[in-house]
Image (cartoon, rainbow, N blue to C red; front, side, top):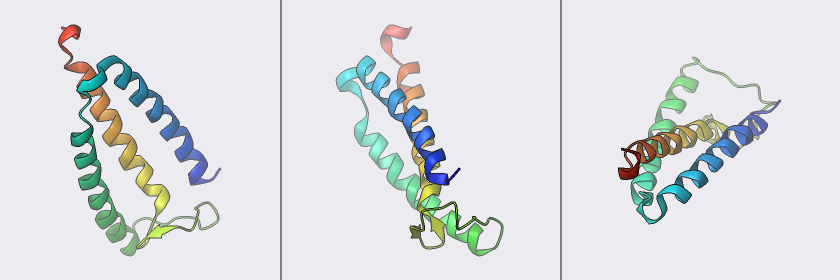
Length: 101
C-alpha cells in the first residue's frame, strides 16, 4: 500500500466529517479559523518534518511515496496535519453547539 492510498482513506473520512459538520452547523462554520489553523500547522509541519527527516530520525520508502516533496518531506506527510486540524475543528464546533446543550 502506498502512502497516497492510505491518505485517501484518512482524507475521505475527514471530508465526510466536515460535510456532516457543515450540514449541522450551516453558516456558523468557522472557515476563516480553519484556514488560519491549517496555514500555521502546515508551515510547522514543513519545518519540523524537514528537521526530523534531515536528522535521520524518519525515513520513507521511495517506492511508496509519490516523489513530490516539500524540502525533504514527502507531500503525503501533510495529509495527517490536514486531517487533525479538520477533525479537531469539527469536534470543537459540534461540541459547543447551543442546541447540543
